[in-house]
Image (cartoon, rainbow, N blue to C red; front, side):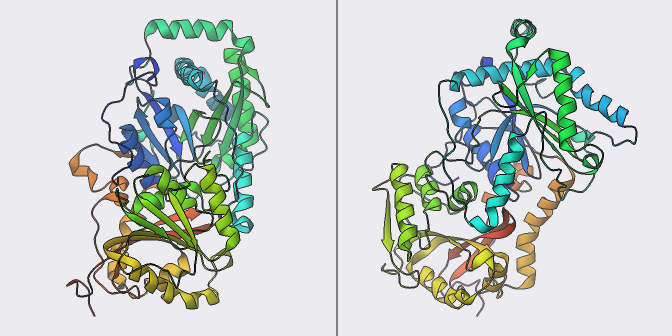
Length: 515
């Protein structure tokens, strides 16, 4: 993590550690964001027992609530009730219903224990009112419908109407990866505490309400859609614990995700998703991706940081909030975009921290070598299609190269086509080698739960180091001149995938560059 970022902490203490112990959590993440999230929970929260699958990262921490809320690369945060092997698909629907009900009836202690933790955490934030900030997505015509559907899926309950979705995940057996009772090693609950909460849950069941948010995919979804699954689980909870279903204003939400690889049950820690930033008035680029770009850029104290295509300033806001001891400048040619960026900066209380300037990205009024870090979202064309704007790309890259100092860093967000065009000079072997480490790791997450051990021998193999570990400079000159490709990740932007590419500026006569 760059200087000025979240401090590393082996131990955390204080009121945020429920009953003096640790708890098991999981976060949802956009596709391709798992490496950034893994690195963040380890650095910011001192997380242990870190595991991941496609779109989810599981971890244990005793961090305080205010630290959990600072996670920037996660979509939502959940207390993990349990993670099971996938439910078996049978033609006997009665058998499947029985197995689903067993998730509730055979693990009562875990349910009551996790409710205890949730009540403790909820007590710390019950006086804080949270509202969803208004948001305008990066490409409304492209991502708006996707994000609306996601919000609706997260709000469905016992009578869920969420559509069944099939994820691109290969079937495999992960029973060995099952962590069993997630609270068995946390030493979180004293016997007296558990007995007291159990009595309260039974006695106060008439006043305790819930709803179930269910996602079901894979082979199981073909037999039981999410709506039916949610109803079955809701009925089981009502019968077993005496809780009341409340679709509109429940005390607690139960999140259930069932697929061919695992069954996960959790409880949202916050009502508002972590990805919804309170300090962003109007969102452009997805906040999690913007933060990842800033963290990827290695911002140090005193650096001069430039976003030459700043738009609404989302990347600048994420960077200045996390790394405040740098100097930030955003430029754009559009008056409306600059006005929106200024509104965001003012709402975030960062006036004076981020300067804005109207100018063309091909004619930056900056002296050569004056900038330490450049990050830019370069979509170029509606829905990332290559248009006549492509003709300006060489000029844009040359100008970025000119203002960047030797040793400086550039992080570009590129469409798939632009990624191929810009890096076409890279030899096939070098590009494949640099990308295969990410690609193979991504494929691995699709078929199994992967555990990250905290030892030096395995650090080089973990996706957390893929985002921050050693940087292998590709030794073939590209159209970027002295900007050399170091590392890149493929990330999801809704319906579109893009590449987050990191470059370093080297001397023109750098020995590893071939003419």
